[in-house]
Every structure is written in structure tokens, then in C-alpha cells.
Image 1: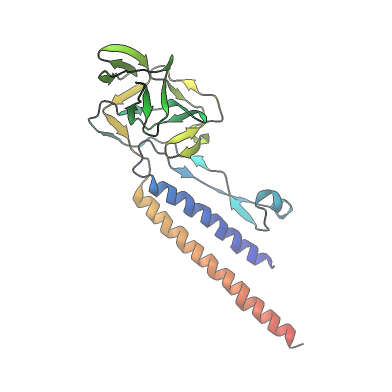
Image 2: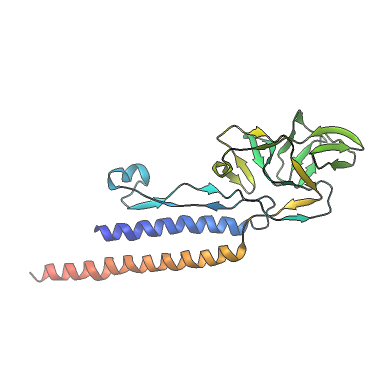
Length: 238
């Protein structure tokens, strides 16, 4: 296959990856604490085709990085909703291990512990926080009260490179580096941080990627049908 085919096919492959990323961002525009992702492109030199993409193409999607910029904080009036101002992530326990999130839509588990909307147990600085059946209030420094009694303080951590966090689902993130505690977090109760996704920007980007994919698809069609067809016809006349 001619080199031009590989160039066009590699472009189509990267556009498909971009479409997947954009679709995920748009689907989570209403998820509290959700962070968008950014991707780049990288060359895949021909000697390492098999290692890079298991096919002979000239470019591939570069690694994804989390867009860790804060989203807008909107009031909800619910005392178990909270948003972290500035740097910081809540620490939660899941079946797969410790994870991190900025989605502060909290609930009360059957055993009285704090948990996220997807069932992860929220950690305090001294372990899981048990709020029992009392009225829950979270102060601006992350101290949690139940019926007026202190029951714990939210564990809030930060990362040297938050862009390296890996998304598992929605606003739930996995870390490859060890976090450090935020000494004096600022927690706004009765509010939630919104996704940092601009739906207008994503739709515009989606349109651009779709058009680019169609142009590359047409290029492949021209190369496969017109150029190769003429070459075959010319050879056949000899």
C-alpha cells in the first residue's frame, strides 16, 4: 500500500479517538466535578509500527491529560453537597482501591458513613467518617458535624501534576503519584462544582473533527479507487 494511504488512515484513526473523547465530555457535561481531557498527536516511525498501533500507519493519538481547571461553583441548598475551592480532591475508598474526586454530592450510607453518589466511601483525615442518623453540617475547613458533634474532618489532598490523573468513570480519578494533604482546604457547603466542559466549544470541535474525518475518508477513496485504478489500467495496457 502506498505511503499516502497510511497517512490518511492514520489521520482517520486519530480523529476517531478525538470523537470518543468529545462524546465522553459532552455526555458528562452535567456531572459535578467532571474534568475534561485534552489529547495530542505523535509520530509513529515505521520501525515501531507494531509496538505503537499494531498496524502500519504514520501517526497516533498522544497521551491524554486531564484538564484540571476548576469548574463553576453553583449553589444547591443541600447541606450534604460541597465544593472544594482551589486545589484539592476528596479521597474515597472504592472496591478497586483509593480514588479521588471533586464531585461533592454526598449521601448517607446504610451504616451511617458518608459516601459519594456512586457508592464510594468518603475518607476523613482519621479514616471513614460516620455521621449516623443525625443532621450533617460541613464547615468551610472540612470539619463534619452530626447533630452538633464533631465526627471527623474531610481528607483533601493535592497533586504536583493533577493533569496526570487518570479517569476511571465520570468524576472518579486514579493517581499514579502520591498526593499531599491540603493543610487548609476551603470547602463551600450547599454547592457543587460543575463540569469544566463548555458544550459550545465541544460541539464546535466535534463539527471540526467530523469534517476532517470526512475529508480524510474522501482522500482514501480517491487514492484507492482513482489513483490505484488508473495504475492498474495503465499496466493492463502494456
